[in-house]
Length: 79
Image 1 (cartoon, rainbow, N blue to C red):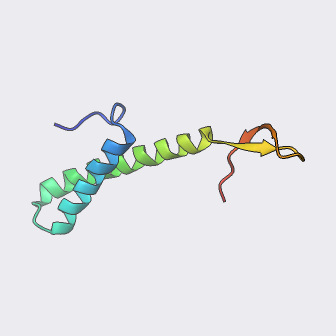
Image 2 (image 1 turned 60 degrees about the horizontal axis):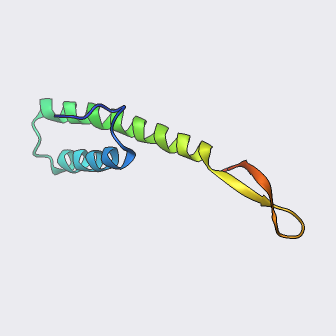
């Protein structure tokens, strides 16, 4: 039984996605099952990407003053 995407942890979602990719790459999956797995994998990929984006938005970088002491925080900017 598949767990609801909203209650699935990032780590569990990633493990399930890796398992799905393995099954699809094996080439032994019947077509109907492959389609179902692909749809589930696509939904898992979207959910994991959303969770990563949300986590990145919550990360803050510590700013330091001229003397090296913490002076505050600012949003993390990737890139």
